[in-house]
Image (cartoon, rainbow, N blue to C red; front, side, top):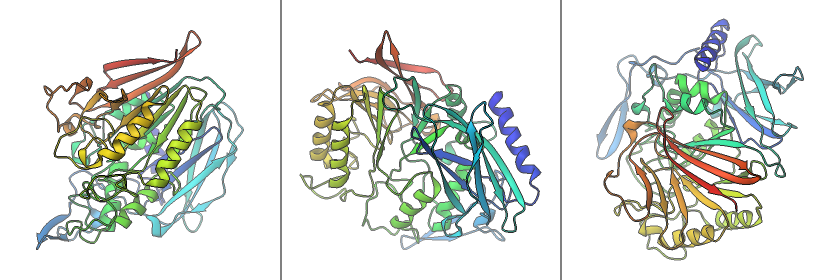
Length: 469
């Protein structure tokens, strides 16, 4: 009820700005560290998205090349969920919660060449502190527009043993929404946990069928992040984003891949659109420390990979040499009690034999074995992965490496594995939607990590407890 009332207040704030600009696609808060955060905003022409039931693009194929048309009188700006962009400026005011120590950024213009988005960096923050913020907008002539209020918590410093809660999901397909009024039930369930941060492992949306141009790719982001559940969640919780195949370009894609099925939309455009639509820097692999007991690694699985069909061997890669060297160097240097690789795709699996896109597949066996052995040699390091449309806990038979698949964002999106197909690697298997909730804390002075697989409404389906002895 509290979150619903907050969302109503948010809508009312938008309605008061009669002439705009508006924030129909909400805000996102990301890349949080002990002393910094990044706020993403996009200005929109209208206060609300085009309602459900609006026009949809019509895709026909001629000689395997897609042709896009719209219903008579419609354009991309009139499609269901569309939120056309608008010019103007953004400013962020922020303060530690419960204080009047407000600071503000300079007004910053949105970029029409980047879908009217901007990223505002907040620096000089206090570690392990809840901040409230207010994203203000104004039009090109200075008239005030919509304001959105929100908040986030900064990370504790690396010397502080702190309780940290985070959640992880994957596979957020727009037609598979399950929340009344639009959106996904997992977001209210995760809010109830008051997480320090959230990770989306990729497949945030699915370009394959309808994103046949740059403008249609951007429409996918607008219709997804104007959903009420998504707007309400992301203004209150810091997030880290990774991309996978479906939100880079198309299924199982790699740089240099040739296909006619994506029309005028290119792999390079997909890379650029991702960076314009989320709060992050240009470097898509990075690591974050959350107190003395937790460090996470977020990796890039599309930009540096070899073609899937190439013969396997020492030179075939998903991560690329530079990223792999960075990963090994930073993991080896870490003294966190628990180290977690959060990967867009699996390293352990098991996966289906016909798949050829990840480290659990035979097509990338050499690099997969190299990474599993390295990670397993580290003390108290695990893998959390997305991509697979089912939840599992698996233990690699060769190295003992543990992998936790978070599962997709809704039950309707679950599938791809048979519930009765339990393999020797499995410690838990559930073909269901939901998310993974992780808590790092101390019990009796010793670090403890609890990993809970949850259903779409937050029901705990499975729990593991890992202890630093």
